[in-house]
Amino acid sequence: MNILRCLLDFFFPRFCLMCGERLRLWETLICIHCNVDLPRTMQWKKPQDNDLSNKIMGRANIAKAAAFLYYRKKSATTNIFISFKSGKYPYAATFMGHAMAVEMSTDGLFEDIDCFVTVPADRKRKKKRGYDQNEILAEAMAEKLNIPVIRDVLKRKSDSLMQKRLGAMARAENAAQSYTVSANAARVAGLHCMLVDDIITTGSTIVSCANALLKIPGTRVSVISLGCTRL
Image (tube, rainbow, N blue to C red; front, top):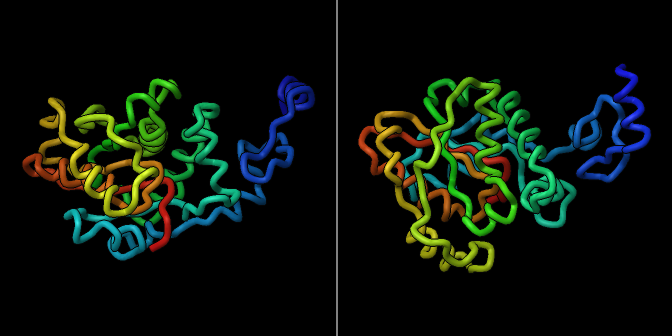
């Protein structure tokens, strides 16, 4: 073990994002025990028949969908999302993106995917954070899978009211009016795009983005998310 790393870990201890316990030298961001206990959905084993795909299919003509984790408010897992959504730990999104690529690729989820496209972040929140967490997730997966990220394909028509402040029906109406394709849309014509989002709850945003992409000639769309709520 590197002596310098040992010294740094002694004077500047690191702590698990989930349980708050001190990390061992060989652990990164999440301790082994919490990693084992992550609420993995295993949706990538049946990407056309799971909680997430059933939430989206019928509202958007997607090929497949899978989330890595089940998201539940006030759970230990929530700390992972808070860490990068707060702007403090962008590396947490990189770490989780790498984990998604490694674990979710075991059953062929990415085999026919040509590119990653991200759900665009709210401009004000992106400016405050200094980064777009969806882009970081996509870049981390791209690094492991050698699948390119095509940027700025989707855009918000306006930075409308934050989705989490709205009821389910209002979310759907707001999202449907908020997303469109940009001048870069021609770059994904004829490609199978994997649409990336960090958390999917009602599915309104991802459905709106998917339907915008599907207007591009010859484009197919699948969906991947770090977290999703249960049906």
